Image (cartoon, rainbow, N blue to C red; front, top):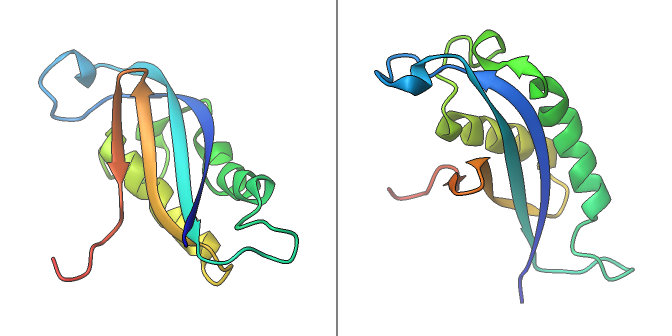
Length: 129
């Protein structure tokens, strides 16, 4: 049996998509929603696969606090990498994967929503592809 645990947070930020060739090339803002999903096969001694509070704390410390109320284009790594939702999702995934190494839960995917009807899901590197 596998349990998937997901948490959601948000940050407000501005960005401009370099080379887009449309209105999103101009500086504009979003309330980005971030969803992080981890999986575990076992429950701990009190019946938790992974603590929601701990997962939220890690996300807030590693990602949200760094990106909230910023111009992403001026914030590493997006000062060099285009701050698309796809690249934001990969950044969140990489930060969370590093923070969760060895904790007993495996990072499955990250979603970044830039509006209520537009989002990206990033699964990380797939083996064998």
